[in-house]
Length: 408
Image (cartoon, rainbow, N blue to C red):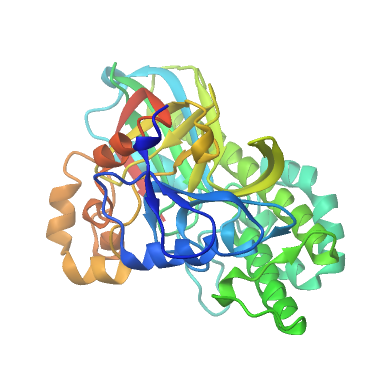
């Protein structure tokens, strides 16, 4: 593969930053953030930046960081295990009803989504009384969680069983899509919900405290780390691994509920999961690269090893892609996790109106109100440019276009 596919960012000191961003805008703040990460002494070989790269809280979204001897919790973030799940059905476009509001309503009834916090009221984005299937799924995780909570009691207060099989807010979504042959797919995006956020937040703060206790000065406090061999390192690796399992299970439970909802909204019997993919894009795992065993943190990036299937979604009004990894070693076998934001949520709300959003999501059965303008397609990079910039990282297997989108 040609090394010319990426650009080198050299901002003085540290390992190189290799950026798959040709033809895609990248803000200076993101470059500064990447450069600070690259200067950490335990970062291995180089930092890889995906075409959807943008400034994040703590660490850059769209970055792949391999380390030896230490781990940076903020390089994973607080939405641990966030990722995608997609399943092809035996339905085709002609099987869908002429009006899709009933399909959207059925999905919204089946999966708790959004968030509402009021005194004495249940958050409608969680289960009031988790159904038996959710309780059974939680049982597979409960014992390990109990051991974590015994060490870190604050975790017990987090939403865990009540969030399993729920969507959340922000850029999390459930979509019904059509591929290039008009076959119907279901695609969804969510992570480890409240309990994953609690784990991420807890360990990021513990890392910062450790840095202050050891008088270690950092270019950015959010790059606080755990050295390998310390108790906090081992506990974090255990906790983050658990949260990643929770996230994958969360998506599986949601997918089953969405398929059941489709069955209620569409009179024709159908098969599901003809092809099924479930992949993280905020996570850490041990891998071997360039002959060395390393810890790879992907924050807003998908594993794209040779032959591995992945999902790269666009925005609410854009195409999404089912992809197969090419196994490019220079990207640490990675690709982008989506289109990537081109502006903040605040800026999107300032710049665009509800009318702009309605026009941009024409033909999609979705929310078209002021509360989702921060997720409007114009707030994201053009997905076609993002895909062109990473042509040496993945090959496109299916192109999907959503017809129904459920947002929290």
